[in-house]
Length: 383
Image (cartoon, one colour):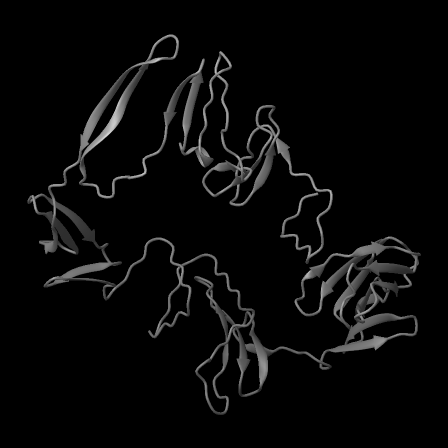
């Protein structure tokens, strides 16, 4: 069963769970994803750190013994592979190595001696050691930074060492997008007077346009706001009409507008005139009959629509802070019902145990008693 949103257990236990076993890492991994490597030589948990799959190691996981072919060799490594102690025991002969207790503290230290090669004979005896001396010298002791001659809409930062070698970094702007100028030893980066952005632009804060005309050359406009406010700068008593006009090319444009003089919505018809939109009890009568049906007619008495009022849905609010089980009566006469719950504070969908107890009731159960009137139950008959 595939979930397309996060599963929040709200503090409840995930019992008898098995991490997915795979012979190879899953593709398209996300940071934090885990799987169990089922190959014979591995048998470990892995997690994805955003770049690569990493084995979840035991806190005491380190190489502590490697047997040589003769069975008399011993190799000891420190935690996470860092060499802390090396002992080779071949027929009572030992080779011991320890990490330095006086490491170099500066990059320009010189005269450091280190072991370059160790030669063993066929019995494991040390027959030769070759050493070498490492010398590190840094000739650059001071550096200076300055600004060089930049070109049009660019500036160059110069980094010069005491050995007179120079490296440079050039900062360049883009035409109609970013402007780079120099004033003495200062580099100014900003927007030009006329900005032209060719690709996408994402604005995290508010956008204020102070010009008199806003032109949007796009085929699709997506607005999250469900209400568009026209005449937003109006004050005092209402005097300005407002509406929407449709550009129709070679044909005359048409409008849907609010008329402030008549206080009515109007539609511009094909003849160019505006006609008031009729609503309320002006053009439609609603009559409820004794058989629980609804008949809709217009003023001329012609029947437009007949809707039988057959009840196929039910809603109820539950929760008292102490009970964990609730029986809800819907009287649909069928167990073919759909049950959904949501939290009346966060309006998130809530998962609980649901049993269709009879053809007219369902039983809803929780691990923890919901607070008073906190859960809304929706029941819909199918068929």
